[in-house]
Image (cartoon, rainbow, N blue to C red):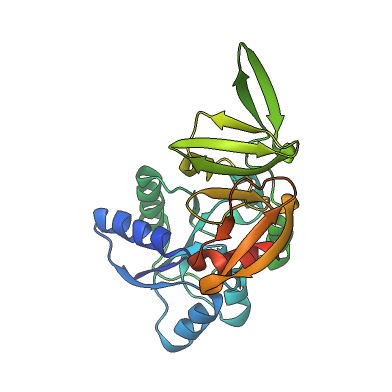
Length: 251
């Protein structure tokens, strides 16, 4: 079985490759962008199976299909839930919701082996996919946080949070009212709980709310300094390796 991975986040691609290796499936190559994928398909025999992320570094992956007739089966790897995917799920083998689970991966691969020929032309309804990606159905991101204040519980709604940050081994949120509160979680756990169109992890210590950004300033070593509406307790710097993704996120 010839398999390729198309995924813009290289750590995620490598993790998926390791999981496939566990299932004794070798990966032919890994591609990371629409442009790179189009060029590869133009010059290589199409694989049996593609693991395909939807949002790539330079656009949406269905742009590949608009440029090239792909003769491969597809398993989507995506952050969108099953309701948003129902409109086009029948055109693919399956989809895997990130973070990918090894059992679900194995099931999807077995579904491909059991039910489909080795080559298949996949035709997607691009207009429907575009609508779903512009207005994705809510996948259950956090709407509020419950904070213990003395003997009381305080509800803080997500729209009232400027940023999340870590300090002295603790994780805090900072509100539009200029208050910070300690959370019983980590920034790593928050990655799967925060709506990605609203919050972006700019470095190891900070998530920022796009609606709270007041100013962005060029900083040393090709980095950016972020100024928020209220928060000013420490400098907020976009890590150099995150600047490109951050600029794409802003758009």
